[in-house]
Image (cartoon, rainbow, N blue to C red; front, side):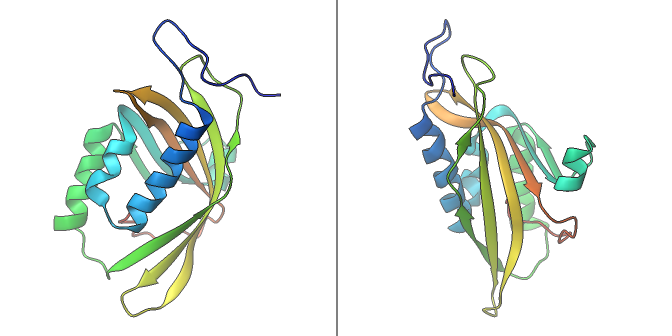
Length: 168
C-alpha cells in the first residue's frame, strides 16, 4: 500500500498524483510538439536527466548515453539542437503508460515509474520505433510547479542511436 500523497511538511507539500501525471504528459507533448525551448523548465534548477540502458542501470554503472546535471546543461543541449547539431529533421510521438507510484522518498518527493515507447518520424515520412523503456522520476514542487528533480530514462535495448538530439 502506498503512503498518502500530498502530505504537508515544514517546507510545503509534495506533488499530488495528478500533478505528477500532468507533468509527465505535458513533458511528452512538449517534446512531441518540438517546443524544445520549454524542455529545461520541466526540471528543477539542479535536476539530473540521465539516459542509460537497462543493462547499465541494473549493473549500477554510471555510464549513460546522455547526462545533464542542472538546468544549465539542458539549456546548452537545446542551444546545440538549434545551432551545432547536424541531423536529418525528425519528430517524436510518445506513448506513455499509466504511472506506477513508488514508495515516497520523503515528505517532498514523489517517485513514479512510467513505461514509454517513442516512435520517430523522419522528414521523408519513414516511421520507426526509436526507443522503448521506462522513466523513473523524482518529482517535487519548485516555484509552485511540479518539476522533475531526477528523470532516469532507462532504455530496454543497448542498441542506441548515437545521435539523440531531441530529449527522450
